[in-house]
Amino acid sequence: MRAPVPVDETERLIELRELHLLDMPPDPHLLDVARVAAQQCATPMAGITVVDDEHWHCLAGIGVDVFRAPREVSMCAHTICRPDLLEVNNARADPRFADNPYVAAGVVRFYAGVPLVTDAGHALGALCVGDRVPRRLTGAQRDLLTVLARLVTAWLTAASTATTPPAVADPRLHELDAMKDEILTLVSHELRTPIASIQSSLELLAEIDTLTPQAAARILPPLRRNATRLLDTLDQLLLAARLSTSHLQIPATVVDLAELAAHAATRAAAAAARRNVRIVVRSVGPVAVLGDHALLGKAIAQMLANAIVHGPPDSEVSIETSADPLPTLAVTDAGQGLPAHEQHTVFRPFDKTEATRRQHAPGLGLGLTIAKAIINAHGGTITLDSQPTQGTTITATLPPPSRTPSAGPSTPNTFSIDYR
Image 1: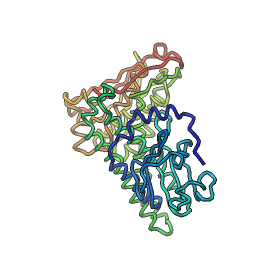
Image 2: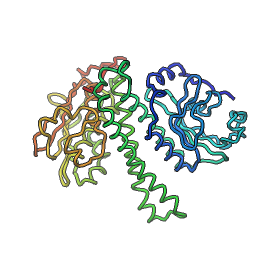
Image 3: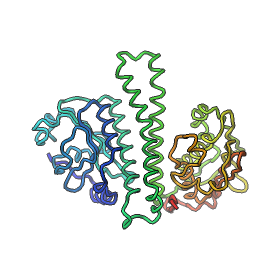
Image 4: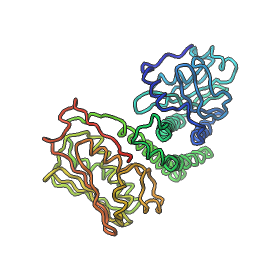
């Protein structure tokens, strides 16, 4: 049975062409992800695919002999019509695939695929696994495929942006193109490290017949911690891509900066505790602004995470809010501060300070870039005050509710990440 056509087919194909994915050279990082998918799902086949108007293309595959085939015989063509995982336990018993030539020939009986959905909402292809015998995935395997699909989507978007031909590249990306190798190495490290740890934990679980409380206490916390790190990294990549390309509407909703500060401190408490850093929130009453509750929360979270990373052990990180004369939120750490020549670079994407590089601190160097883009979108400013050996203060200043530029939900605020 021929797959249905996605309702956004025209827009989907436009984005696929703009990303130039079919022009990309073979990527070993994608092959690594396919290998992890096959290993963890215990399948002989895994692939990362895209689907154009006529063909299915395999960008990276394990146990795969065919890398291009007509779209009408592709199971991934069915996957891109769904918002989530498609699992076919026995293709011969499924009327959608019973007459598929690959199914009839015994090449594939089991298939599971997760659509690669971009930030624009278009499914470009799928991350899939397959087997020659019927089977069923576990809940953990389904969750892992979903996480890996998000990873692949972020990777393809970043890699395509960094390798866009000069004739069609946005002028803002010229410097990013020059930094391509360094950026891709950084992204690869930030994604591969937690995946390797998750893989080790899963291998340990596979060797245990009965998971005792003692074994669970040893294995599950690092598994959960690294899964969280992986998702946070993907969220940063996707949010940065969204902020660099989107024209978003900032709703005229009353938001309390003091409440957001307290919430951010609570969420960051575990990360701070691991570094023996204390978070102190100083607020005198509500601090009202108009804006997007979720986006402002993300900006504050990024500012706070930056301070925690740079604060020395047994030190204090403070978040202070004030409504007079303008709504402000300041995050201060007790770190070594920044030399003058590095202070103008902290808001640039993928830019890490010399001290952060020496410490091998985790992260992509996108946190303050994201915070600045969000604050600017709300008509505000973000500044840095830092002296060597005396710590750093990042201050976000926003208009009061009566002066917020986004006076209504129909008024779009245009903002972007500056790569210069």
